[in-house]
Image (cartoon, rainbow, N blue to C red; front, side, top):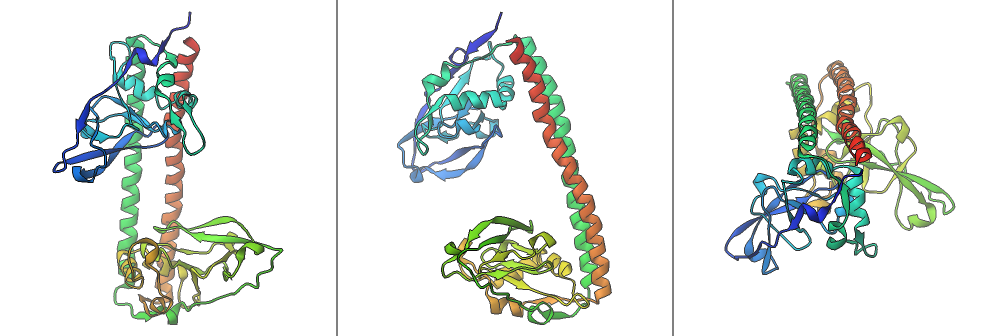
Length: 383
């Protein structure tokens, strides 16, 4: 015999409306996608809230985004968000714990099955899809006894705590590795002369003669030192008046729009021959005198980032652009090439270790979804 329960049997919509007071500050909530729960969006003055009244969320309630429910945007309201205000696009529901334990429902709501249920309860055109409350509340979910629910919660909580502990250990090790590299870099540049970029890594441009019937593969540079990435092909017909320039492996590449937040990278062998617009500057070193990897590390240090910021005048975002001439006069520390190569060997070893940690982290991240799948698969089959 199947054991199921409709959602309206244990979820009751809260109608706790409050009048917004202009002189008070209120917390706001963001519902993260794919079952990642709720977090503080920020605090806002009541006078900045357009609506005259809003829902007041309470700790322990289930909050769901009408717009993004089909993408897993929901969660249990944590204690630190008790009393936060939300619009009517974020209905809050009280949970009848005599039928469904809130923490059990929190785990279950992260399953693909529940997200699919939310998707089926959502209707509308592409840009106006909304979860229909009545349809959602009439959906059926598997029902377990309270003891079975407690057993699942205890099991998942135990593994989750171990996973979190392991991830914290990996993050701490990463911080230690970075601190070690910074200390080693400081030793390497201690007393080193400062030389202008135009001298040690001059700008090199390789203009492309665009042909309408060709496709050009573009390259991008991520912020925060996260390297290069490949963009989709660009048809020559679509280039228009935009100028394109070729990258070569080993180039020190600057995205002039976001250089101030670390959008600097070295072109890899697989980037060879790709193209970029005038928004990308390529500098080339003489490897017998200056190692590009050494310069890249410098531009990821607080001092290097500060210099890039000072060379990128303007407001925030796209209004801050790295000036070509300003880049050329940035002074960078250049110790003997043997010292640079010693540091780069140290960097390479650290990167090997970081790659191992990254693979371990990916494996750990996959553990909880796999465990949840096995746990709730049995529950679905029994229901």
